[in-house]
Each structure stands twice: as C-alpha cells, then as structure tokens.
Length: 496
Image (cartoon, rainbow, N blue to C red; front, side, top):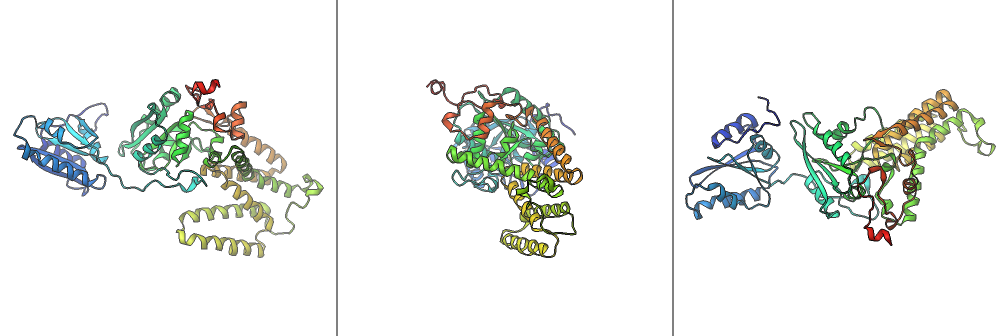
C-alpha cells in the first residue's frame, strides 16, 4: 500500500496492532537489529522499540529501570500516560501520533514507547551513532589553527559550528531527503544576514528531490541542487573545517549539512572561493597575501605552462633569442605531445594509486615511480628530461589548489588546450584560452556569476580577492551573497 506524504496514519491504541504492523512492514523478528522490549506497568502493556547499534544502551537500561519502578511506587491509575511522561528521564522527548513518524523515529536511532489504550507514543532521543571523533581533515591542514574537523555525525557538526557562532539568529533547519533513506539534511544560515530568496530556492530544491536515497550524501545533493551536467568546474564549495563553515555563514552564505558526510556544502560560491585557504587567515595580512599570490601563480601554472611550452616547442620562432634554450635539446622518435600526455596521465595514475595504496606501502610506491619508472623512461628514450620537468611543475601547481574538484577541472582544461595547440599551434592556443575563459565567465552557480568579482567587475570585491585584508578593515560583507545586513561590525565601530 502506497501512502501519501500528506496523509497522517494514526497510531493504533492496541500495542498488538502496532507490533503486527512492525512485523509486516518494518521487519520486526526478521531484522536482527530491530528489537522490542515488552513491559507490564500498572497492569497495562508498554512496548519499547529500538534499533541496536544506533542507540546508547546505558540510556535505555536507565529508562526501563525508571518505568519498571512505577509498579513499586504508583497505584493503579487510568492516567498511566502522564505517569510515564513524568518518568522519562531524558532532555529530548517528543510526542508523536503518526504511525509513519513512529517507524521513522525508530529507524533513525530513537526509541519509541507505546502504551495500550493510547494513540500517542513517546520518542526519546538516545542516539549514539557509530563514528569517529573530530580531527583535522587531511585536505585542509593548517600550520596554526583548530584541529577539530567535521565528522560523519550531523549533530556533532552543528555543535562544532554553533560553538563558534553563539548567535540566537543562527538557524539549522532539518529536512528529510530520500524516499527510502530519509537522510537528515540541514540548512545553516544567519536569519538576519542570509538572502531569503537563496534560502527559499535551496529549500525548494531539497524538498523536490525524488530519489530512493542519498548514500553518497552531499555529492548527490549537489547534483540535484546545481544540475551541473558535464561542466567540470565545481559550482559549490566543500569544506571539512568547522571554522571555514562558520566564517562563510557570517559572510551571508548558506551551508548544507548532510548526515553521514564529514563535509558541508557552501553556497553560493565563485571560482575564487575555491582558491582560498584557511592558512591565509591564520597568518598576518602580508603573509596571507603572499601565500595567495603564490597560489594564484600555481593555478595559472597548472593550466597554461604545458600548453605554452608545447607552443614554443612547435614554433621556436616565437621565442626571443635569449630564451632560445627553451625546448627539448634531444631528438626523440616519440612526438612531444604524446610524451606530455603519457607523463600527465602517469601522474594521474600515481595519484589514484596513492589513494588506494595502504599507508605503509605509499612511500615505497613513490620511490618506485620516481627512481625506477621516471629515470628508466628517460634512459631508454621514452621521455626527454624537459617533458618530465614541465609536467612535474604543472602537477605541483595543480596541488596548490585547495579545492580537489577545481584542480581536476583545471587539469581537464589543460589537456584540452594541449590538444588544440598540437593541432592548430598558435591559433589553437589563443582560441582555446579565450574559449576556456568565456566558458568560465558564462558559468553561473545558483544564479551567481562564477567569475565575480572580476566579471562583472567590482573594485572592492576584487581588491579583497587579490589582497588578504586585515579583519578590522573588512567592514562589509561580500555583495555577491546579497546579505540583508552588509556590515560585519556593529554600527558604532563603523562610525569611528
């Protein structure tokens, strides 16, 4: 029987009907981890439903102890509902009247108490999800800064963020996504700062998701939200750092937290959001600006260095006389473009192998790749040394990009430019670079210009992108998020 989301199916007053429903529809008695504890309190049947592994056993034992002691201290009464309500020693107790809600609460890790003769049940939050403790994320390490990264528990993640923003206007809206998984998804924002239209758009898109489940968590949410298609450039930003998420909330962004995921989605974002790193804000403005310049240089190197070098190899006349040394000094039977692709894909193979290689073997794998494969490949004439050099520099440049997704997208752009240069030489480089630039400029993420503040150009925003300004000087929030309150600092501080 298919049930409508809008229809409320009342909880039967008979505990036997509820038990039969749990056996037929939920698998009670078949699934080993779904349990029931039957009690008799004041001559009435009381059943407790739970899922092993999602509940804290010590809390359940204490609750059962309190309920059983009712027989020793209370007289037989028709008001058993109120008596049990007063004996549930837990800070989170919810009354439910919907049978579907009862099932959802049990499968979410809460315990549900039902009583014979009552159409209302108690849902007690005693969840204890399996997971790890907060620790520094591998992809966003800093020299100085907090080490409490986000984890797979949405409750802990909201707590880590709320610890940094103790504002009564901070909101975490909870939604359920997935017809079968019913995964917890939360919207985080500042009520008096975030753009209401953006919040409504995201909320509407999340409620419209119609799929069995989202086992891949936030990545599935992203694909439904931004409808990226085959555009390789990331349209949302991910972070596993609670301080980064809190900073973006204070700027007026809306974040999306998904249970079972250690990262959060930040919206809206531009290309330049993906090249920012927490380390810049843990150092002085001068050092942060220097690091930002170095990162921009690394990003440009990862995209343009190899295509530009290949162009000079194919057309040496473009080089000034003083730079005539650029290019291979050795003759080889394998075309340079083929060598570049072989070396570039070789680096990609190493990256993929590093992910799947056990940690104790990763060092040995790196030595094999560097010493044996690289050196022998040059000795036998498969590669010329210059190809290895420039491919390595471009590869290092891609690793300077904090966003893993953006580094892969930049690499795909680089490979496309290499093909165009190999086929069309100078026109291929000029046209390919122009088309790549126009493609990025044309891209929009949740109706946000992807290349803001460069295009459309905004001087103040562009200055904040290029230079890491001191926090006391950053008075205004970025206009790209359309904040309801543009000032970061209190009005009195702005008047001084």
